[in-house]
Amino acid sequence: MPHSATILCAALAAYGTLASPLASRWGQNCTVKPLGPGQDDAPQILKAMGDCNNGGTVVLGTAGDVFNISQRMTWNLQEVGIEWNGILKPNPAPSLWLNKSNTYQTEIQSQATSLIISGHNIHIDAHQTGGVDGSGQVFWSYYFNPANNITKNDGDGRPIAFTIQHASNVVVKDFHIWEPILWSSLIDASYNVTLDGMVINATNTDPLGAGKNWTPNTDGFNTFRSDTISFKNWKVICGDDCGAIKGNSTNIYIKDFACFGGNGFAFGSLGQYQDQEDIVENVYIENLAVSRIDSRVQPNMGNGIYMKVCLPLILTPQDPDGPC
Ligand SMILES: *[C@@H]1O[C@H](CO)[C@@H](O)[C@H](O)[C@H]1NC(C)=O
Ligand SMILES: *[C@@H]1O[C@H](CO)[C@@H](O)[C@H](O)[C@H]1NC(C)=O
Ligand SMILES: *[C@@H]1O[C@H](CO)[C@@H](O)[C@H](O)[C@H]1NC(C)=O
Ligand SMILES: *[C@@H]1O[C@H](CO)[C@@H](O)[C@H](O)[C@H]1NC(C)=O
Ligand SMILES: *[C@@H]1O[C@H](CO)[C@@H](O)[C@H](O)[C@H]1NC(C)=O
Ligand SMILES: *[C@@H]1O[C@H](CO)[C@@H](O)[C@H](O)[C@H]1NC(C)=O
Ligand SMILES: *[C@@H]1O[C@H](CO)[C@@H](O)[C@H](O)[C@H]1NC(C)=O
Image (cartoon, rainbow, N blue to C red):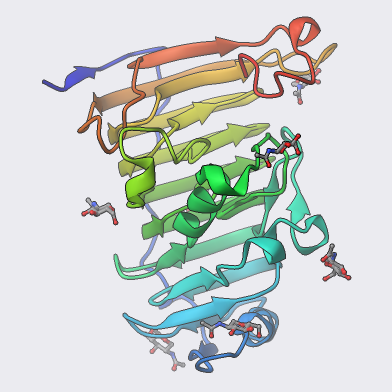
């Protein structure tokens, strides 16, 4: 039986509903289509983000299109709509993405990311067809196949699929993330971000990993140093925290959120950095359902909602994940 919880952590000021429909407010369109087998689509996507910056709409293909991404990207956008109809799929080559010069290091736990969206007034609509396919299975199998004899560590270079960093007034709608390698999404150093209608699925299908947690660290979301962030209508199947509210997260609104498998829903890790205060304030959660799934698929759920507080002094290099 699934167990579910509804928690009211604090009274909440009124949160607005979504603003005007996407795209229609913007004039110019920049449309990109996948270039086809063997080609890297990142350069043409970066060009479109530049050409349609400051008031345009970027149209990422149509439903069913898959864009091959072979380099890290930062989109620094002002007043941009993105019709994200197609799927961005990082080239499934571990040696490419585990090379730290091909990703960015984030401000939290030295985790890597391959895509950063920053800027102001950004409206993304993926229409339930678009998103990011992290090709995570290749990585999960790569790390956990005993024949490869590799250990995984925080900050080892596995990239986050979708990062919103130094951004304000952002809306992301009806967006999918398939097979994230590490965290599905990170909201860092941002203000006023709404993610509405997210579907995330990090399910191992490698028979060697049956009954084991082969998808660790595939969190649904993490927040850090961010204020006024809303998560509505989420469905997350993962091998770690469906959501993790980390240090200096304030005015967080979560509504209609379904969490399957993984570790549950976390406040933390908190207290991770010595001499740095972590403030978590005014978190409102309504209708969060946390459910176990078949343990042959995802065996490790031991919590509903839980708190992770770190004691940095007892962390040792031999235990890099520690309680964090
Ligand atoms: C740009 O694309 C949007 C969404 O597909 C469409 O509604 C709009 O009419 C297009 N605008 C122009 C100027 O082509
Ligand atoms: C993706 O791009 C890389 C680099 O250009 C290329 O080697 C690879 O074959 C492409 N993958 C696909 C599926 O097209
Ligand atoms: C890592 O990537 C950089 C830049 O793409 C490249 O110059 C370097 O040779 C790569 N290192 C390894 C070990 O492959
Ligand atoms: C696995 O890797 C460790 C550390 O690199 C090494 O000491 C050990 O010999 C390896 N084991 C096998 C079976 O290759
Ligand atoms: C938050 O962002 C939304 C969507 O861009 C915008 O409509 C709203 O005015 C912003 N609210 C604040 C307080 O900036
Ligand atoms: C999640 O992914 C697994 C493996 O690909 C698939 O079997 C399952 O149907 C997916 N679940 C949803 C709800 O999409
Ligand atoms: C959180 O905010 C407080 C107060 O501004 C600051 O002192 C602290 O360093 C911040 N912590 C982190 C992890 O950014």
